[in-house]
Amino acid sequence: MKNFLIKGGRLVDPAQGIDGKFDIAMADGKVSWIGAGEPPKNDYTVIDATNLTVTPGFIDLHTHLRQPGFEEKETISTGTAAAARGGFTTICSMPNTNPAVDNRATVDYVKCVASREAVVRVLPIGCISKGRRGETLAELGEMAGAGVIGFSDDGSPVPGARLMKQAMEYAAGLNLPIIDHCEEPSLAEGGQINEGIVATRLGLAGIPNAAEETMIARDIALAKLTGARLHLCHISSKGSIDLIRAAKTGGLKLTAEVTPHHLTLTEERCLGYDTNAKVNPPLRTYADIEALIGALLDGTIDAIATDHAPHTENDKCCEFALAPFGISGLETAFGSLMKLVHSGKMPLPLIVEKLTAGPARVLGNGFETAGSLKVGNPADLVISDPAAEWIVETAKFASKGKNSPLAGEKLKGKVIVTIYNGNIVHEEDIR
Ligand code: DOR
Image (cartoon, rainbow, N blue to C red; front, side, top):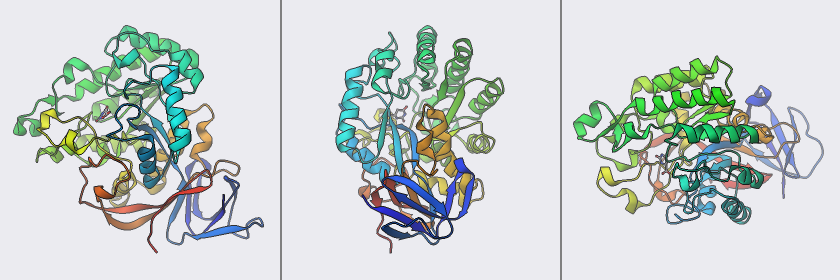
């Protein structure tokens, strides 16, 4: 393992309130020094970060790695390589695999493969219900013992309030969050894209905002009742923001995430029947985007998470209504989010906060060290170039999922180097 000295960059570490020109040294896989003068004596490999930004490695609370069972879409190896290319050094893997991660043995399997093949940290999430069928509780206590960081049936909601209440009671006792895919199934059933003018023009069935909002309202009520930690996934509508903002003033242990695609793309992306823009929850409207940005600015939303949902070309190359939901998002997240910075809608340090300290706080339970470059913390770090322009070429993705609505688009902002635990796991050839 090399010791690195990164010189001349803009160091942004929101957890420590740092935003300025500082050098940073790493030794033995840990951050060893931050300063402006001479670092402690050591044998360093020097990286020149002039005009570049240096931040903690990003944390993704919401990644679909597809292994076991859907290895044609993604594996732990290819998914973590995609994470490294996107600047993510910690990712939380969703349990909608086959078999689903609903017991200790499957959690152990994911951890075992990750320990051999992953190039970044993988934190498994366990199911709420057995087989994600929404009928009976999964082995929550056993999975907690095996090291899951929370529980989710993501991809599907938990339709029954009684089962969700039970899950929250157990999760509260285990001090782990319920990671909630908020969708009222009877309202969303058959829907393809946002319910509205675009759906009408395309002749596609819509998914109303209320499908998300009614479930959020229910689960906030259940969190109040049980005292559970509730984390709301991929928030997409203004009405959801209003509900979360109101609930947060009541002192609930409530957190929420938003995706880069819901922050930057609208339902119009579906006008050409591009199945790569088909995602659940659906892309919505400019008014929703404005509300989501406002919610990041005022702290109503805690984290930006990719909902990286890789699918094969065959999966997506079909009639719109038959295509699965999902966007391959790890490798375009930073470049997409930089649109908000370049257009003056959000400051760079806040974007970094929502990719580092924010998700670290959602995880809690000691994972806070993954979200900051404090001396002594693991050397998980990203060097990015906010001004680098590049074209999204999905053929070059490390992810098996080439399903990006951004294919062929120019983005400004690129991850240049990713360091995980003191080792370079991604390096762009730019100089
Ligand atoms: O678009 C989505 N794809 N939303 C989800 O909730 C699940 C995900 C998947 O697993 O493909």
